[in-house]
Length: 58
Image (cartoon, rainbow, N blue to C red; front, side, top):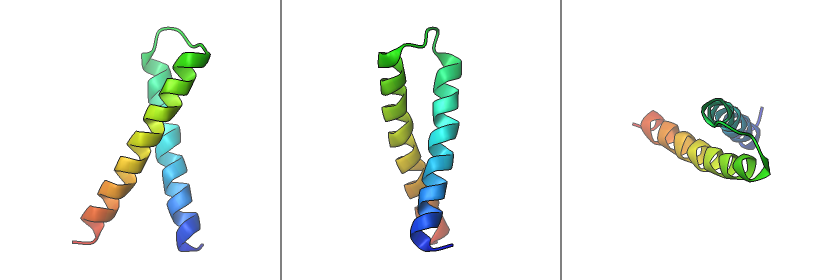
């Protein structure tokens, strides 16, 4: 598995986990909530990947 594929897989795993958590905690699921959740989950996934990479290089 190449480096790009590994980073993509990690990002996707974080995004899925955070999106699932978002869906559990909201009360109603509609299109706008889904878009906001997807965006927030993507930002959180990017931050988690960056933080893990930063801690791994110590």
